[in-house]
Length: 104
Image (cartoon, rainbow, N blue to C red):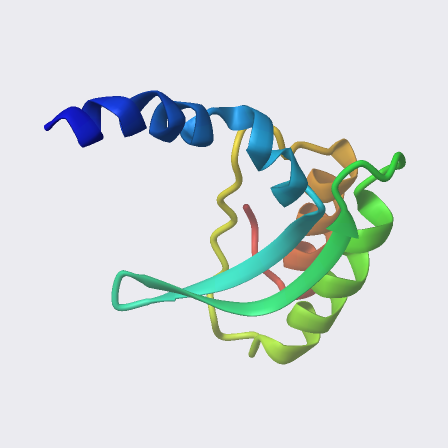
């Protein structure tokens, strides 16, 4: 028991977030397809976590490739977290659905 009490402060210090900053190296932009309640990544792109700039140039090629792979008869549902918003994305989805003869 004494040994555990001596090691406890070191264990707590090791769990602090200060040593975790090295994990913030890459941000992975991912597009997944949900099949039977499981998200399967089908397109992704890694971007430096601290690289300044817009996300749009990274998302557009992923979306374009996926758009070409989805059959016209399929329905696509877009879900994103609150940090992912772009007026350009809404415009792109609207124009893509109109080209396929559908409405949002």
